[in-house]
Length: 348
Image (cartoon, rainbow, N blue to C red; front, side):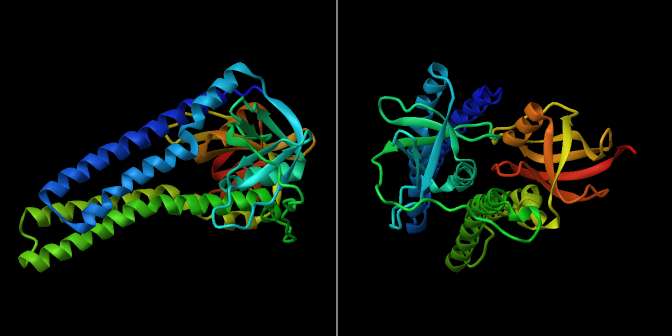
């Protein structure tokens, strides 16, 4: 299991963690400066936000990334039979337990439910490690990255995770794809909360300025207006970029999975979020030896989706490739999902 994108993924992930931690520290300093000029209980509470953000990022993946990179450099990937235990129903449930054939239990966070469904479906997991400290890297077929896991005591008698299913006759019946669509929507909406909070904070600050000074024609009013514009513009930009992916659950209901051959027609140049638009040419095989080639755009394509095209030359589309249509695209049974927009026909 040697993927060309794996090292790229960890390189970008490390940079992302550093960016979050550095940004959180800078924001903390900025808030302290504002506190000096604008003493306020609201700003005092806001000062704790970047600290909590940085701590959350670090405890979730920051401390694990160096170990993961060391494991990938020193040990090979291996495939092993596995089963998954349901999370404990407690307030601070740790996540799913992946139990290997030798009884070793590896815990993975609940945010990776799509990965879990793939393991339940196939009964196997790819992993590296664990090391002497219990850290491990786990993954599944079709995914171009590893995910954090650590050894935990086995839970005897715990119920196993069940495989979800549907009967609509569409790609929405794929439990992994459906779960991936739901979680992608939740993640995108969660990403919009900070700018919305900034927008609301600016409005609240403007209201305070009006109540205190009788208007906004002063430096405080200008500062509040700047915060409102920044928060509103930021939220609008995020919504514009995520508009297609927010509706992935609906796109899955437009038809069953249909296989197409695919190849990229331009280089994929990901940003710090490992997302980038890329064009491809897909061919829907209608009969042996024949097919229709179509140019498509994969907006904000994730590295897993791009890796699937580069390494397998195949994708699956939910529904037909009507001109101008927007469709869900991915790999059945794998947490690899994205959006495809048809641009034009290459040949008949």
